[in-house]
Length: 453
Ligand SMILES: Cc1cc2nc3c(=O)[nH]c(=O)nc-3n(C[C@H](O)[C@H](O)[C@H](O)COP(=O)(O)OP(=O)(O)OC[C@H]3O[C@@H](n4cnc5c(N)ncnc54)[C@H](O)[C@@H]3O)c2cc1C
Image (cartoon, rainbow, N blue to C red; front, side):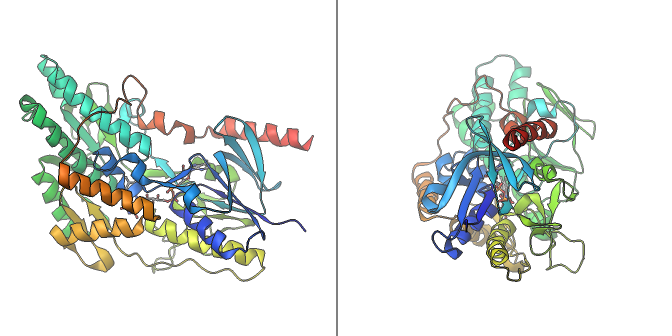
């Protein structure tokens, strides 16, 4: 009898925790476990704003998969298609070679991408903060603007380069705006003439910031941002972006060369390639995380529409957060094992434990288990939470060391030179994941036909 093959696509919060659980639950040699992932690390994305601000080195958030996974065979590449009839995943390796990976059970956990809206100029000029490359490029770009502003006598260019607009009042936008604002304050110590010119804006179409935190903490976060001299505009969005300006829907036109786009995410386009029902791009699954009518395929994390059993509302879905993705990873591994053993599967259920938002420096707001915290207690809880949630000891040590080094030696504001002259918008950097569905389907079909022949 051949060993069953379990293929996991994606090693983020959901994929990594699924793989660790599978390795723990399945006896050595009883099944083959395969991971398809473009990277050999798991990214701890909640701390990305601290990479953008230079508080953490990029390596501290890249948690080594080789260190954590002992029995998983890794295929370095991206899944570009799935054929549920033949039970194969089509994978484009990082070498561009396209191969088929057969499965007996498939776990889809490819996460999400920065959400693109139909706003003129957005895809050409918007910067993102969703992965390590974007965080590093963003930091370089922001620091380069100040250097260039300092080096010019043209007051218009100076104003454009010293103005920064962040779009999105969720945790990513708020944390990114606060941490980069502090970076520019630090850098401006070298450029006294620029101090009065530097402007930061945060805009969101919603009437409140951080709605997940409730009214009081949302207001608290708003006050903290305003205290950092960030102009926050709510119920406003972006109408147009060009190289030299950002036009807002309230009619204002801001001279600006940096638009940071954090207004939401959209599920990986891979989910559409299965041909199964989706909800706003997320693959629909049952409470047992199985795709209906395809009992061998499971989906978890940001790219899956998982019913939220903790809510009374029948149509409620689990929120796209690390907290949920990680726990879904553990449940899906148990259900994969149960399905191989032909045992009953269990439902995924989790009650939200709250949210922590790091506003850089010593500022934070947090709502653990429904308790509103701000000031030093929120700062302590936020830092402790991240250390607890990082999935490996070495990663925890690296992050702690970075925080200590900053506390002892102050900030470092040198550019690394990554963005210089290269395409660096979020669309450029995430391009590999914006699957051209038609092209991928053709490429997959060609390979599968060749295999059949
Ligand atoms: C800046 C920022 C701050 C955040 N802060 C918080 C927070 O404070 N609290 C919280 O709970 N959540 C937070 N989140 C959200 C959280 O990071 C996500 O909800 C979580 O990462 C989702 O986990 P996932 O496993 O579904 O996807 P991910 O963690 O994104 O992992 C998906 C993986 O799949 C890989 N992949 C993608 N496409 C393919 C493919 N075709 N083939 C193979 N592999 C593929 C990707 O490279 C990636 O490694 C934050 C996110 C960001 C960006």
